[in-house]
Length: 531
Image 1 (spheres, rainbow, N blue to C red):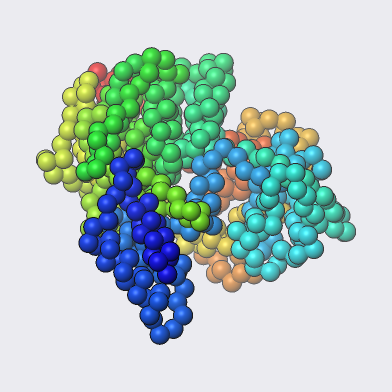
Image 2 (image 1 turned 30 degrees about the vertical axis):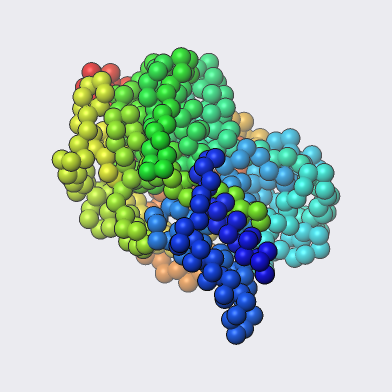
């Protein structure tokens, strides 16, 4: 039992280690260890020590701040994977439609492409285990398809036009994970790049895209960070470095136990000149706010959209011996002007924190810039033009774009929520894929000439009726343009790639339209920046 007690104390000490400084257990730590020892050895019934320890860790972290958290080994792997540059698997992008795995894209050069899997295929069985029509979780399906490179997995596939199931033996390989959703020329001189997260490969992806866009005549850039919830902080430093001049402060961090650490731009960046607009919204957080905050503070570009999420706390990952992890808040980060953009929170009250975005909506903040109020104590000035900016709750954009609800209705929400928009697109592709591939060799021809027909929309109405979604003529008429656009974009994604999806769907992106207007008007652009 002494060994168990020693291990418990060691574990707690490891959690509280900061760098090389060894933590010395005080009375509270000894008290916690004694409680665990007493319960384990004296409690009337058998206890699960692992669950009890995890529960104690979770309870402690819950009393600190909204972002300090514990994850078990499986959660840790799942949380970390999207930020890494690759994983081992079969190389497909898929959607679950009506409890069936539908292959949206086959990754070029990946294991599935090599054996002949095609976009549009439905995977029915994996190693003789039925995965279609059984309401299996996505995570369980992924476990069956993923595995160490070099290992084999057998799948049976339903392909449109073929009565029998097709069988494939796929040798798993290393699959790249991309974080850049789209990169294309939005007009003759303006490039558009959309980044979904800040992952290990993000800067390389960004620079590759910049190189291609510059060859197409790009002079100005729109960087889309809408819905980008963040990622690796050091990647945000590197990306901001591509936009800012030599020596400029990007961000600094500081905490009670952490001395100030600063990140500064290096001599050479990929886009230090040229007009720049960064698009953000209420879901842009953390690393997105580091980049947009640095751009705003140095008057380097125009920030456009809605107030960002407001996450200005730095988490240090502390790995546990069993593969679990604690992400402990150790510092706050500050923009170059000295702003901490962390929104207010009350320790131990995560519900109030989680409801913040709903409260913003209820206050009308997502519809009107005038509904956002900052106290004078949070007022700061940009470093070049001395414009007024605010801290203490996200990055407030230079140009506000209200949330667009003009085309959204309850009817639209219902058909989207149960996947009918996707299903209509897939059904259309099943019938017309070969003809579409022959007719549309590039996205330009597709965007200009392809139209979603009345027959396709009738199919959507019929599917909705089968799902007992009541037809509302007025709501349907209001949302029909958006639903047609979404179907067209999904077909484009399947025929081409995700970048082409955004080239279609961005036709209804009001933020992008305003960004293009400003970036093509030098006088207006300079007026906003005060230069």
